[in-house]
Image 1 (cartoon, rainbow, N blue to C red):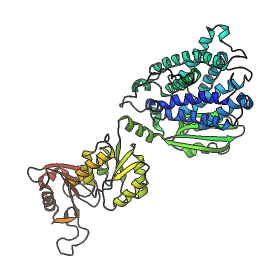
Image 2 (cartoon, rainbow, N blue to C red; image 1 turned 90 degrees about the vertical axis):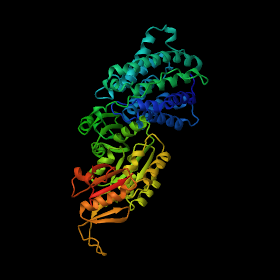
Image 3 (cartoon, helix red, strand yellow; image 1 turned 45 degrees about the vertical axis):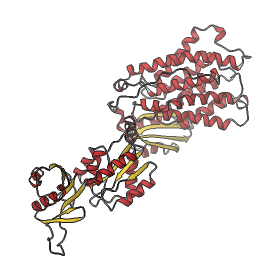
Image 4 (cartoon, rainbow, N blue to C red; image 1 turned 120 degrees about the vertical axis):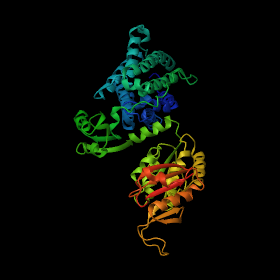
Length: 544
């Protein structure tokens, strides 16, 4: 460049990063292809951050001329490669690499429209070459259209404005490059709009391609830096997020987005693609003979790394759970602020809770999951705040400890039965914050009377019942015993004294069929009956 200062170069990169960062979440929200995991903006920003950090490392007082343009752009290309994550990040790193290789091949030339056109063309080729089966309507298409825009401008530009003279000032260079980029950005925006017509999954979701939009934002930042410190970013259209009803793309069948670096010698990227495609998809293997960046969607990250065990050293492993990312994105798009973890046992009970869109931690027959299992459950919920319903007095302390350890805001509502939690969840609203939900659910639990019928495990010391007889509880108090039918009726009557609706959940071995439970409910009381499948308890009861 005409100005040999590395600070000037960094200002351009920082402005590009800032433009993307300002709309990073918007880019994330547009992300539906190839997997709707909502991380395109983050992945592209991470690549740009890696470039900025490398510039900071190189800024040791030397000028750009002292470092050498070849050395500089090569270092930046490697930094982008090492920092890349996900499809969009790796493809962006290849755009940086292609442009860097062209700039490095012409060390004596000033960066002018001719060199920019060549750099964009080579960058587009490098990006397409990195993808085994390039899809049109993606960031590949958008960048190629911007490269074509610069080439078309060059063909219609007088010779005096195609090249810079050796004595051109930094201001003259910036002005000339800005004029070229301004039209390329305008053409890029048009290309972004057309992506919906080119890729069916985008049309179904009603969105433009996230990566293409991210590239336009990056170049808008470059343009603003070239125009000067007081220059505003060019006007870039905002884009609405996808419809919530958009389908999952078929390529989301694998769980883990896996990224790592392989360092060795004589590495040839195409030698490894076939083996990776046998265990996953979205395969990208890019780099050179000494360093490869590997990206693959797979269910088995260990096997992906094993493919390179004899080729070199595997480092910089980064594994993201795409199913969790998709769930978190859907929750965010739906405006969900609070989620719920509930401890449950019994197939029917787990189904009842799952139907209410809460995360179930299996408590086993004893309803006693560990703190680590509860913490894992909290982390699985795709919301920033989580309420935990322990369903047993024996689980409350473990649940409280899990909430203390959680990086999310989490709190326990100390439910002592599954049925109390089930009825309380009627008041749950995921769009409310955790404090509002905590108040609503706590009030619902307080208004609920719970009980149950279980077969006696042993003879009663007071002689009231023998092993195998039915025993009815309201809270912790025994209120009835004897035959199953009479005990059920008496216990329900006790609960119904303060309730308008009685919920009965049948467990394993319940001796009365579900469709006959109404015969044991007092007149004027509404019955809700469900199959719970819980062990130990023939029936769980709750009244409100």
